[in-house]
Amino acid sequence: MVKVVSVHSFRGGTGKSNTTANLAAIVARQGKRVGIVDTDIQSPGIHVLFGFDESKMSLSLNDYLWGRCSVEETAYDVTSTLQNTGLDRSAVYLIPSSLKAGEIARVLREGYDVGLLNDGFQELIHRLDLDYLFIDTHPGLNEETLLSITISDILLLIMRPDRQDFQGTAVTVDIARRLEVPKMLIMVNKALSSFDFPALKTEVESTYGATVAAILPLTEEMIQLGSSDIFSIRFPDHPLTHILETVAAALMD
Image (cartoon, rainbow, N blue to C red; front, side, top):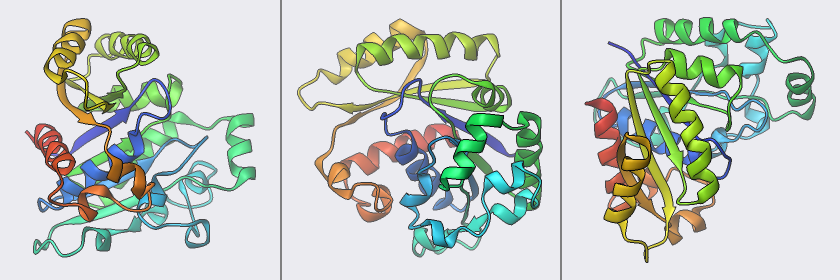
């Protein structure tokens, strides 16, 4: 059965796209067929982690939303980024959004048919024979975000140990409950090593009444990598990778 996983944060800068890319890669390396859709159309970026640049994007999610092509034509096979898994079924398909200023401006000016986006999700699942569809959402709350939350089997909320994030995440949690998301997990990212992690986990879980899948420490290697690669592939034995693997296991449970 296909699982749709939306990865969301109320504010930008939480590491949402890095988290999405890493979790998708880890799941795919377990022998799963995974799709990743960058629905952060106003500020796309997850393609960078997979070594994509604008010259490689003949088509993007924008082209599908404007009726220029089928959604399947916007999917790029990036399975090679996994390196050799030894599992025949492992696959990752990336559906990027356009970096062209004109395309972004058009979205801001005209919007797009959110219902068509939902149709595209279902078509991708069918055409690519996916086991998992990861949706990298736009921060905050808008029509696209509400759609993603509504159709999700799992909602993973990313937040930092920051008071603004605490307040914004509370809004998202309330809406997710109203929309009856089957499973909701919270991941705290960029926590300083000096923090009391067990106490932080207890505080977050008591605040939202939701499970904290993991608390990720602020890691120098992640900062140095600068989104130029997928961390869990570059550093397979790093403690941060092991934490991400526990989150991936929770998604697959």
